[in-house]
Length: 170
Length: 396
Image (cartoon, rainbow over all chains, first blue to last red; front, top):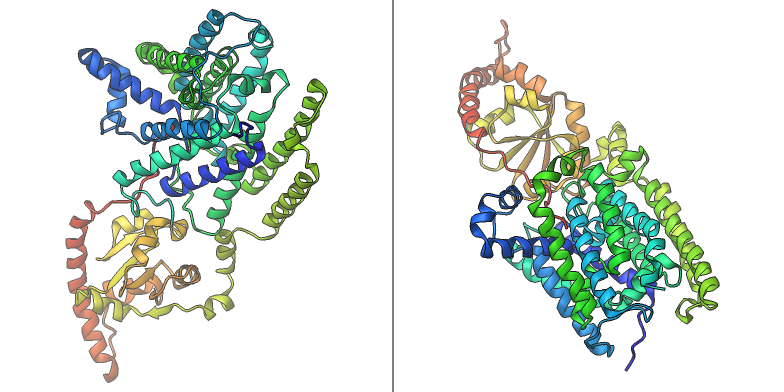
């Protein structure tokens, strides 16, 4: 069993080809956070239908998406991601249920970090109209100004804040 | 011509393709090592730059591919989705995401990927991002003004910088290669060794040189679109082209005869077209000739495509470009719309006429009465006939 990771340049090249094929077929790039948005809208529509009918954000979403929020390209793509990552983990012998964290911090600290980090990323991806996949990577492929600015802000921001959270990782 | 959705691939099949693309996406991310937060944040602490290598190689590869496909007319760049720019939300949103990255150790795509192989911290991160989107949705009225401020449209970065696309692409590739070299040095200093995978440095230098040569050649060979436009100014080249001419009488006759085998492509301005447009005609601009909409029209079999412009030379230029692009059965209106108006629409019988011309004049007189009626009738139909392929919408 080989658990070594792929050469990063080869992986990047394959990722680039995949992105190119995606643009060639569908006219748009890859994404991730859009699927989370669809999931949130679908959940809220089911749990609190009276609330979403009167709330501005969901109303705007309905105007932009005629179909059900789950019948969405990015939702199907993310289902594929789960399958693909699972297959990859299976053949490279990396499937295991574990909470990964630096030995210097407690599990609880990692859990809190993951929740807050996820929350910030989810929020930021809405504000920035896309995350590392949809805005930064796909934006770079089509040389979108907004995408590249968001990319610079994500990585610039991460470097700027990295020092303050170094204890979480090193 | 691409994109293939929605004309060649329907919307339902597109969802099946979404799953297949997703599987490949997830597989590549996991194989690259994006399923562990240790590797992802290594970039920000200088011990592992895998993310930077994968990310930049991927972005640059796709970008070059898009430019090449566009360059050779295989992909209509005016139809692909370009993320819109809202400057303030792009910057602040990006900074918030950067903060989330160093606290949480993942980004949305990689967290789903890591969750799929059993990382509990990643599953928690996914839950957190769910809450983050929910917080945005519920607090939307508070952020809406900020979210929509500074709208610059679907602008592309080289337009913003006032540079050419190839120059900008070249700069980006140069930046990526520099970043690869510098980060490998930093990694070596911090870790004391170089990953054996990255050792065949000569190979990478070789590839970089090839990339450089290709990059420079892109400057040497002008883009097909602009080179065709330039060539169309050369009368000698235009004269050799394969399109044919159609004179005003023939066009008028075919229109009166309700000939179903012609379609007219009108290249005058929108205003002129609105004021007076012939039956069976549609309005286009020169840049449309390279697009996907006109392609659909021009590939219709057994159709004579009549190009009309105000004057004949303009029409010939367009006829030349269309023929060079490989379109068949291209006709250009002789004398342009100006002559058509003079000879047919506003026909005045000359006082003296030779015997040979008599029949022609009779026809023209008849046409000058009948055609305006057809034009009038056609005007009513026009309003319902505006259907153009829209730019793909969507995004993250």
